[in-house]
Amino acid sequence: MKRLGWMVSSWGIALLLTLPILALIYEALLPAEDIFRHLWNTVLPVYINNTFWLVLLVLGFSLLCGLPAAWLMAMCELPGKRWLQWALILPLAMPSYIVAFVYTDLLDFSGPVQSTLRAWFGWQSSADYVFPPIRSLGGAALVLGLVLYPYVYLLARTAFLEQSTSLIQSSRLLGCTPWQSFKRVSLPLARPSIAVGLSLVAMETLADFGTVKFFAVNTLTTAVYDTWLGYGSLNAAAKISAIMLLVVMLLLSLERMSRKRQQVFQKGMEHEQETGYRLTGLTRLGALVFCWGLVVLGFLMPFLILCYHALRYFGQAWNARFFEYSLNSLLLSTLVAAVALMMALLLGMTHRLKGKSHTVLPLRLASMGYALPGTVLAIGVLVPLTSLDFAINDLALWLGFTEPGLVLTGTMTAIAFGYLVRFGAMAVGAVESSINKVSPSLDMVTQTMGYGPRAMIIRVHMPLIRKGMLAGALLVFIECMKELPAALLLRPFNFQTLATYVYQFVSDEQLEVGALPAIVIVLVGLIPLIFLNRSLEQHH
Image (cartoon, rainbow, N blue to C red):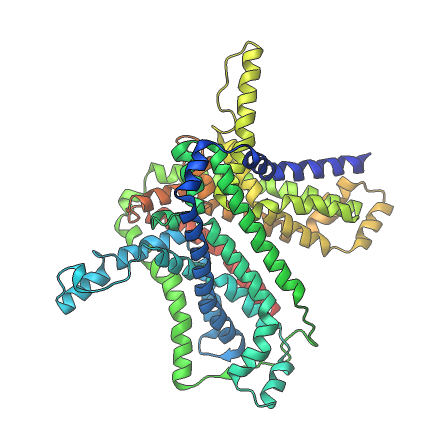
């Protein structure tokens, strides 16, 4: 009977976390309103076209940046390599809309770069010279590529490090140059990992809201936002969200297919000894300039500019609102992380106790939300919660009470639920992998001693998996602190998080005043990167 309770709770959590996806699909299948038909006949084809080219350009740029950097860090001997291989991950901590503002400030007509060029060459107006506009689809792709290339870099570098040195040495003995060895041996073996990295880049690009909105590049993400806030049409927003959901599912399917079609078996999945191509002269200089250039452009320069603005405008930024919104973010992120951890424990332990294949399904269902872009998720959350709000008010009237108003969508409930659906997968993954490392024989010993499931979890499993639990909760906390599109759509009236507060300054082109909260977001984002780097160093 107790085991049945665990199973029911597990399925209850899984269905609750998949409710927004089901509600979104249901709403999207309803007959189209005039607004959607109007959008489809006018601007939507342009939005779809922009989204396609943006994803394609960002993928190309991420590949051009991430792949050579991964190969240089895995296969070559370079001065300062220990620091450089860690520094190349740093751009992931930098929100793309902040980088977008920094580069717009630098490269716009009135910015220091163009002003200096006009002063040097005596140009009077923009008609005298050609300078590519930063506020364009290409500019958005460049900024997103600079921030997202570490996904490709990380996974490709890990794949190169895991390749057997004997294979590479054999190719060299057969007369291959380092380039031929890379093209014929290293690259085909690393292809599945690169495909995973590119699919993550594509999903992040699809989910991006801040950069494309700031650059006025209309994509499907901005279409969802504008349709809901501009037209107030949940039906039209749900239909556009369903298109994005299909694209995400297609990307995930393509990534899985690329891994299934290629099975690679290697003898000795580790570096038996350092491969270490020793680069010299101009080649070494070029490699260092390329790698450090990525770090400077993707992280160091935007971060130093933020620090400069934060010091200059400290008096204006250090105010009651900064503390209030920091506290909002802190409390909201802590609450969601705690609930996500409890849910992950329940789901993971149900699977462990039952030990059957069908108990994996609730785990997988609970993790589906992470693939959704923030705007799509927000619409998925608004559909059922708005219906529930109407039902609660109708029930109150029927019972003779005063209407309570927007109990769910007008409070922190909506934003907390949205975060839980999107980031709960991180806690589930961390807890599940930790539980799987605990020997099943410990469960048998505990049961023979007369412990029930609850006592076994508290006394045996929780002390053994506390690192995994901490990692999962920390990842959820950090992602909640950084999340922007879902927060913009789901936050109650007069409620701001640090991310929405910073974005408000960015959209008003006043990031100088919002630099201090932006630095807080960046520093919080650095925490998982430090953990990640330490775990990579332990493995290699």
